[in-house]
Length: 275
Image (cartoon, rainbow, N blue to C red; front, side, top):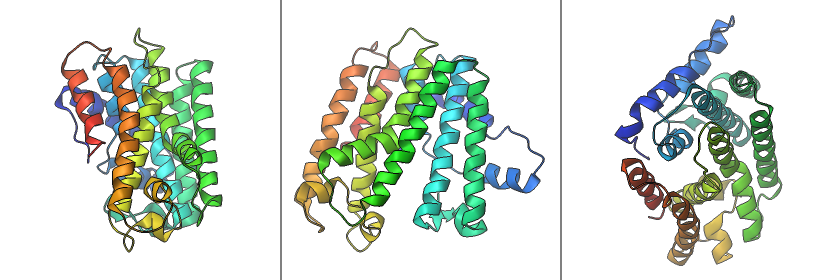
């Protein structure tokens, strides 16, 4: 798990407080969602954003990161429901505990909370950025569903990874840049793709009997690069090279930052993806 750099710990604690600060008349729904949001999570989208903007975060940017985390958590609940996953963050998933129908409602409610945060910014450009990202997330999940039990082309896999994961990184960084003089360029896209490929590789490394992706007929980078559904060190090496390609693109962008503790933390996080 990616650790929390101490230089942005206060920033992340503020985001955590914001995403569970909502109030709703439906006490059961509120309690269940707050419990889910309170579990330990990577918060990697907020970590990357706080580090890139060097911890100098204004109110509008906090709202953007809170919305991003809410959207991400909604996608986790929906993903677990689609996949029939029983465990999330070491505990019973929402769909496993309360059923698929309630899980869909819970995920939808998180999306509504995110939209509320974004509406408070009174900025239609940011709304458009996030609505586009959510749309692509849905398309990415749909493409994954219809490509089950097929080894896709690498370009299609990269596109799916960008849609499913990287677009939300990009939406967060791009929107936050509207309240800063710093330009994240394609940092969100490159880091997000590398992050998704690394997650897929970690699952593959569990072995064919334990890989959830293999069990579900979802074939990711190692299988695609080997063109075979079998365990191979060669596939792992090729996948690490692919990850490194996107990490180098991300580092090219952050190398333009001042040489300080934020840049060093960002570089360390990116380097950890390549191992």
